[in-house]
Length: 207
Image (cartoon, rainbow, N blue to C red):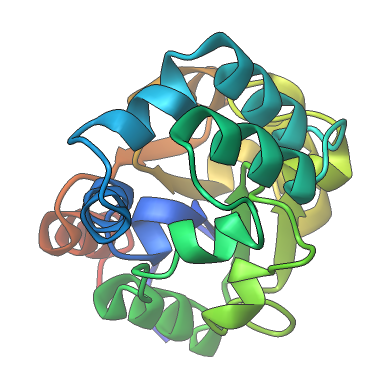
């Protein structure tokens, strides 16, 4: 077992960290659905109703079917099981998945921390094999009623891991999610390219 330089926990975001990039997935969805380039992203991040329903979904105040209906309406698409179709191009990111495996083999505590996509009718975590038994701890914002970058969700994560913040490394692809975790003492890695992310985590853990 290697010396992890005092780190005992590894916390990983789901979309864009444990999976292939969210943007590439969204571009593929736009193309397959016949949407104008950027239309899907605008529905999620600019359209007031889209922004609202996504935020509500993430904290459990809206259902995935609510999201399907609202986003489908904005885009002029059939809302039936829309989240499944929208995320259909996501794949596990092998380099980062292997980090989870190695961390667990070496006795570290692992956690997946995700702002939720909803669990019904489509559970993307289960679909990609990252549900029961993949990590030691799973923290989904919809089940917590609070989402990243709220400090509370990081506090709950390390508490359930049974660790101090200073013992944990956290990887996320959204830079805005990192400062509150860093302020608690968690060491953060901004995930961009999977190869670079893997190298940075290995460096931190002395692998």
